[in-house]
Image (cartoon, rainbow, N blue to C red):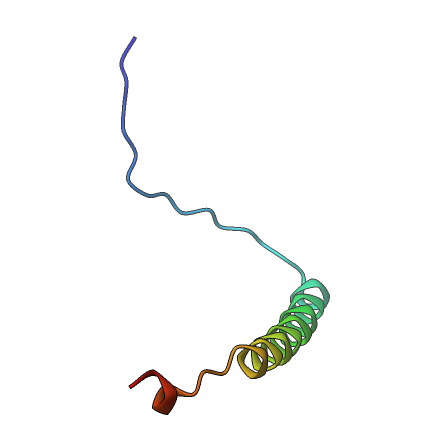
Length: 53
């Protein structure tokens, strides 16, 4: 039996316009949440570099 190594592959999916719009809304909401979480984490882990030197 032959063995093949695949470096990459492409999957093409077809969605209706309504599904695409819904996915875009979910993506936008997820991005906003992720940015908010990142901002809060950055506040919590802020380091004063002047004290390190």
